[in-house]
Image (cartoon, rainbow, N blue to C red):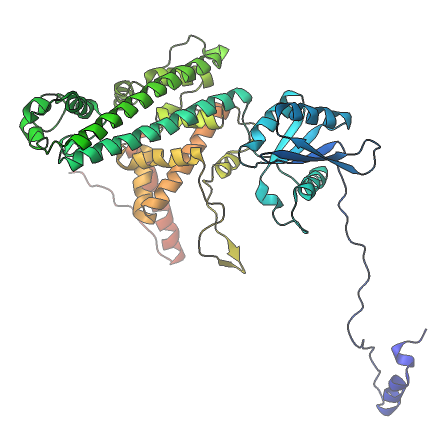
Length: 483
């Protein structure tokens, strides 16, 4: 084999320049060793992939002969879903991965799970950039291949009884939003008649506001008589309220107001039925350890009075017996927030190994995209909040005027970073406290504003001493001299 030193050019250089030796130089592009492409190895062979639709479902599973894969099309009827289960079990499938497409996956998920199959619900975003033309037949094959290689991560789904409770509470919340819509419509009808009920009272849906609206629909037009429905807790006098109730009574607006009130009452009646069903579901979910035990009173007396005034005490007791923990003991967390948390994630948080996983699932973990060592500006991807995250943000916003340690921390963060950052940070803090209470039984204890301020003062003193030491100075704390 000839080396570079044996070439004629190398011998010429060695002879022409005494004491020098030609160094081997590679001309052209360096030849790289040919390596075999890394192939994806299947970790499991007893898995299937399903691409779901409104009219038909495509499923890919291992072939009966043991080599290759089969793709089958199934209808969306219930009988077809049962045929899908039999087809999968005939091929020895134990786990099925499917896309979370709209609401079409719910019935398929429940049927497969009821027949003993492990179902993996996958976000469709993870399968958008696969190569090739996108079709239903190819999608189910990609899902099956990724699932067999262990490349798919399933979404969190609570226990079946929690899912039933979650469905009821979500529908009840939808009715609440619709009732608010009809309140706005009734207010618009009265505004067109120059009846300023929303100026006379703070809340038109309160006791005084609804009493005035019902009296107007019943035919009362005298503002003095209408002002007589004033509740004793109203800040304005009857004379001040009567000035807002002198209007132009037009038949078309009165008719629209009457229909709006009927719709509002109809929705309220449906909400009561949902509340009864929710209470029944919570009673069936009661833990044996909390069965029949009285709910301990809240240490916050004002919060306890507000819960009783809003008639939320029965729901608070039901949630306590269902979970074995009282989330309302945490400052800022009310009955509505506790109801949202327990209906969305349940009481079993084993799917979240640490509190950081729980916070990340709620989209409350701070995230800054960095490229080339520089932070990227613009909207963060997947920054929309979950239902629990949104409820905790609303709960954190109530800490603005709270005379507690959490309230003091909110105000400090608001001064330093702004109100938006403070709401996000305190929502994350509430999520951590809820996680510790549900998983470890760590009860929240408020140390008070003074304790938090003193602890923060000591931290500032330590930081100042470190800064002074770096400058070669020493800080001496002044002692109060007593006469």
